[in-house]
Length: 427
Image 1 (cartoon, rainbow, N blue to C red):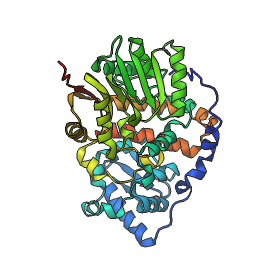
Image 2 (cartoon, rainbow, N blue to C red; image 1 turned 180 degrees about the horizontal axis):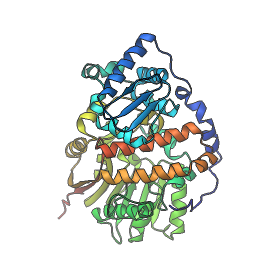
Image 3 (cartoon, rainbow, N blue to C red; image 1 turned 180 degrees about the vertical axis):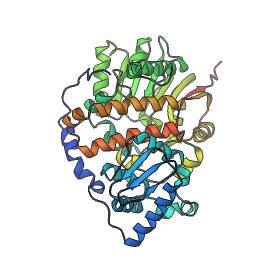
Image 4 (cartoon, helix red, strand yellow; image 1 turned 135 degrees about the vertical axis):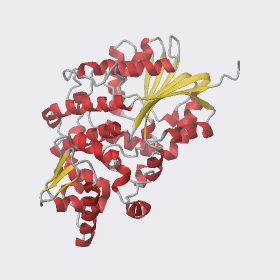
C-alpha cells in the first residue's frame, strides 16, 4: 500500500504492553550464553571452516577475512557470535543478528548464499549426530487445538496496525502472483488479487457455491469469493484477524454472504462445494497433516474441489529437520512446519479419497513479495517503533523477512498451488 490507509486505530490495549515487554520475553538475546573455552574454540573452528568455502566475504573484528568472495558479512563480536552458535546452532546465529553482533550490507544476498549451501554448513559427521546437538521442539508448541490457538495468537495477534504498515491494501499475507518479474510496489495488490482469483478459479467458486475457507487472514479471499455470489464460512484462530476481517466484509456490503468464525479447522462441520486454504498448512504441524487433509475430504461434498496454497521444502531437508527446533519456530511461527511435495502427495494418497489434480510452483514470486514487504517494513521503522516495538523486534522481523526471501531465492523453499478433487460417486 502507498500509505497506512486503511488505518485501524491504535493497537489494542493489550498489544502495546506485549511490544514494550518484548525485551523481557527475549532473554536469550539480551546476553550471549556462557560456554567453555573448549566448546567455543571447537565452534569457531567448525564455523570458520564452513565460511572459508563459501562465496562470501566474512570480516571478523579480530582480523581474519574468510570466504571465496561475494556478499559481505561483518562479525562485530566474534566471541559472542561463536558462543551463541556453539550453544544454540542456527537459532544462535539468528539471535546473534538480533543482538547486533553481526551484520551485512545486503542481508538477503548473504543469507541466500547460506541457504543455498545449507546442507554443507555442518560437517557430515556432525550431521549424523544431529540428534545429540540439535535443540528439540518444545512439547508445548504441538498443534493440538489448544496449542494451535496459542501458537497462532503469538504471531497474528501482535497488532493489526503492525501488519498494515508493510502489507498492501488487500492486507494479504501470502505470496502474490505477478505478471512479470521483478515487481514494483504498485503491482503488489494486483498480484495478490490475481493469486486469490486463481485459487477461486481452481476451486470453481461461482454464484451459489458453498465455500469453506480455512485461515481467514484479514478477509480478502472471503470478500472476493462472496463477490462472485458464493456463501463463505471462514475459520480463524486469531481474534485480531477475525475482528478486522468482519469489519472489512461489512464495509464491502457482503456480511450476508460471509460468516467468520473463531474456530479450529478440526471443529468445522457441514459440507461444501469448495474448500480454500492459503498458507495455513504450515501452521498445522507434521503430526496433524493427516487430520488436516482428512478434514478437507470430509468437508467436501461429492464432486467438490479444494484449492490450497502451501510453502514447501525439499523432502530430504524436511526429514532431516522434522524434530529440530528452529529460529523461525522460536521467534516467529511457533509450531510451524513446512511439508515437502512428497509429504503432501503421500498424505493425500494414503489418508484421503482426494486426488491431486494440479500442482504449480512459483517460488520466485514469493521472493519478490517478501522483498516488497521487507523494503516497506524498513521504510516504516519509525512507525513500527511508534507502535511500541523495540529495536530488537525490528531486527528480528528484518531477519525473518530477509531469511524467508533468501530461502525462496536460493530454491531452498518453494510455494505451490494445489487442486484437490473429490470423486462424485452419485453420478
